[in-house]
Image (cartoon, rainbow over all chains, first blue to last red; front, side, top):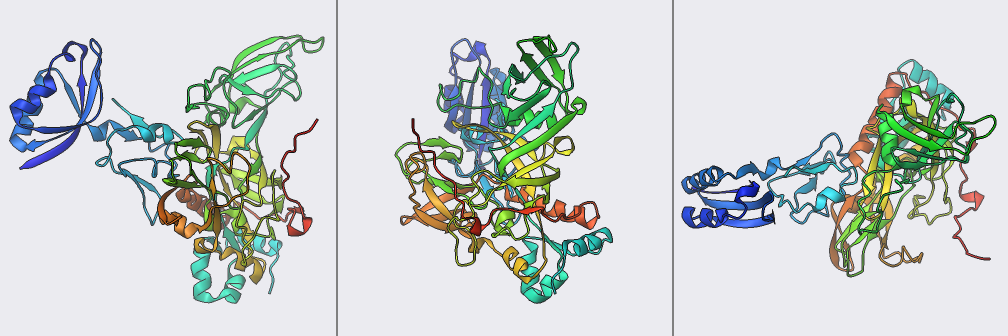
Length: 136
Length: 399
């Protein structure tokens, strides 16, 4: 069964110069789409990517990346809405390029669908009460 | 038969008043007819929650020992500039005030993460705020420096006093230029790619009383989660703005100056906010009760989103240059659908005003009256109406 997940890969300083993603793709027959990345030699780095492939190969790939020292988090746990600060105004709705925000026609509350999120970060600064948070 | 405010208050005290929100009243009147509804319903509640820049608060700190005269000196609250043009222990902070070291738009677009609106929110939340002040020293007020934490609980008075809130209708902002712009109406993408509006539409206080028949100086209101009052007409109050056949203004029109005890308000309804590339401000929650004294007043509260038109204005050219061009008029029903057509192109729309919070305010105000906790007041003076013939003037530079 083919699966696809959006992940945040955290690279500790000692492995940022290793070809971890190259090995992941070649050896486990997975495909990827990088959404966002920041990797600087000798510093921590992160890559946000969508990783797809057969379930067994995906699982083995994740095991390899983890054993290489990379910490993996689901993207949905990395871009969060602080519910206490959100006022449901809607300023984020038309700013988001991937349509992750929508207004419920009944309640007029703003819904955030983290499955659509590509971690571009546009909502972070566009949100007037600063309710959107990156936890990278 | 017409009712009086005194009669309605008697019913509120007895728990017998019939109260509906400005949303609910539309369905009630449709079912029962306007004559019957005007008899049965006593009050219609409204609400709005959005950025209202012309907001601020003043405090009396109590006198230090030895005394310091803040008046004419300098003061900051959490590094944000406060105004010291009053007496020795009085201080005012405006929602748009910034720390001296804020980069503003020197790194464009400025983030404006903290300012006066946030200080007000923190005070209301009961958090300590850092006051630093300096003064020139006098015989009766010898002290020159002050550095202390203050807390709203310890202040003698803390009063929210907003010179212009609750705009009766407002612009829909778009950007016709080729680059993204950052405005008080949010981020506007180039070539009319998006639009932002800022009104609760059919729930908005002054859109339910377009000729100010009931709302006036002294009207008791929901303000920031507590009880406040209409203090005066707001600045830039414009009763002569263009109106539709239904009497509802089609442009920004009337405004309210409001006042209330900050100590009983809540950070849920006073929220410091940051507009990227523009500045800081305060989102304020306001709800106004409209006594249904007769069928005419009821009629105005039956206005729906489809009946209220807002002007679409280009914030890349005509707005900054103070030109009058309105690109189109669009109803709040269209705006709330998420898109409207402009120049043959579908424009996606978002709101800066929280409609779900507006519903919550109108509902809360209704509950306060159902519990007998909130009584109506008779205005002591009406707001300037159409007959007053006033309209805001532009500043003509001279000298």
